[in-house]
Length: 324
Image (cartoon, rainbow, N blue to C red; front, side, top):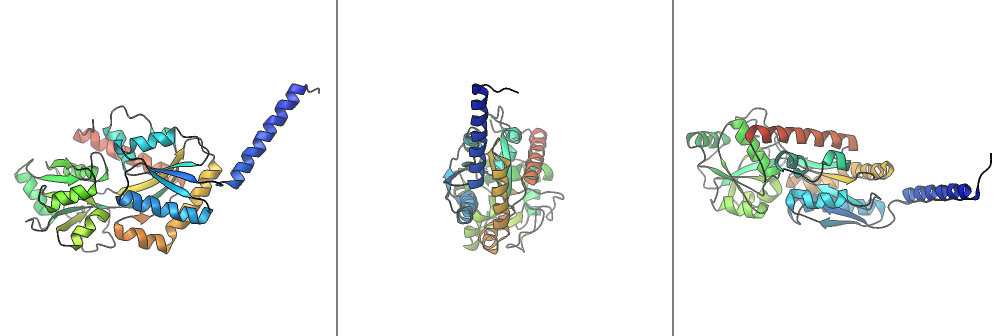
């Protein structure tokens, strides 16, 4: 068999490129990794993302740098990662909105299941229904009774349109068959100020954002949104326990990569996240603020996202919800 000079040159070039690629994989990561967080700075997003980024920095010996790119319900930050070079040096941390946006946003510019590579679900935890401390509502049954007696009179605050707190409230309304007006605020602090001042009769909030006002006696917890009672609030019943059987919703964070990032890199990061999530330090850091470290496999995250999109899409259609 005869080889031309050109064919020999191309074969050598291909072999060289493969060796460089393998060397890059073996050394990964050897420079700072940008972690785009698809939410503004502050709140649970920063607590979760910066906690994991610091631990990944410690374990890999290179900086995992958090870059908050909020806006558009997580769409802006997500698009940046979808368009990034899949070389392992741009990653994404997203909230529950990745699962709720397909249900509410018309003409969403991407398909998360098609355009992103799952790495790991980092955490999950419940939201909480709270009322002003001087409210006459002592339990969820009181709220349901009042809402049914005067449809549309009560209002609930959330930390923003189409996010986890909004959707938890809409699911409660749908399953409890009540009409309560949704009032979105720009972030958890604004929503907490509103409910503590009595601007709304109740709020659906993250545990982290509500705990300072609960401890100071300005708001009162009514029920949590998880499938079971939250371990740091054992005396607060779930919504399912309080008259809405089968209710469950969570507030979660997960890490994804650009679609064609090499699987070896994905597995390297997942493996470290899994170890980090099991550590006592991470559990003591995150659980008091309402987030349980998980560190699921890429496949488990893929299934979780599919289930979330299906759940919220069904609710969106049934309740006629839209964010546009």
